[in-house]
Length: 404
Image (tube, rainbow, N blue to C red; front, side):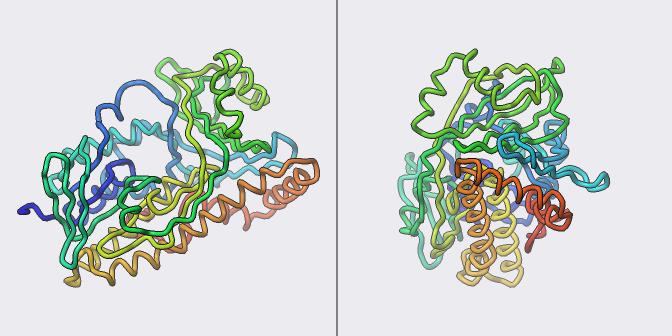
């Protein structure tokens, strides 16, 4: 009971650990509880999982002191090509030469290594790894969690950062709207003959989007990308069961030769795709961040970035409130966080869901209509600029930590 902290963060993944570090930069202390083994999450070997870090999210990493550690491992996204089945009428999002990249691609392992190293060195973070929570309590004056070994952790505010199936959210009885897309994302690393030139490809097929995300060249100069291929759930088992040669042939067919000959790097993995959004992201002395509050289709690569915006907003709200003498779990502060993030996350969720449905309509006429619209965007600079700002995460009311 003696070690009462400002925050009790349940979930120490990319969003939860970033929150702990961002809070520490503002002088806020935290307990971070996570059931996973950090050694397993950062083990050698590329598993294909990578994240697009927007400009705003990169600013957050820079502002909490991780830029120098991460910079050598990120591949700049020079442009984004969006196409309907590689037919004429694609959009090319290319920033001006003085504007920098549209973001950076990182292998998730590198993000975890940087976050975990920083967390271990931060005295304001008490990290409880490989720990299960057996009890949660939220009261008028504080919150607590009991671990399997009997340890009781106390704080002023509980933060659920456990992901889509957050037990803390479920225990709090927060209503969730959800649906299953009946699709599965297949993820694997690729090496390829031709350089990607920093281009991120989003190729839409009626069965689902097919994304090629640029990664840094390998140690022997091999060109590398991360593949995120969306297939119907009913077809997923068959696609995953293909021999490596047959799988590569299917991938090459959908790539239309843009990278030349390819080979797989690492093992294939997959996860089901669904949508969920909570009716509220706060309760008594409780805040939700990241996928605990909103689960998006990966179509635009915004899931992690939206979660990092949650981090910036929550830290700013709490830090400003504490300067005024308010408790981190004060209802006024949580109401401000709700107003700030609730609408933004809902609009992003609606946009990604709408894109998924729009590009999933088969047939020549829908394809022609989509390509006409894409051509219109390509020829309309202000519209293109708006989409690029959205991709960068620099639109709307940004938390200070996400500003350059």
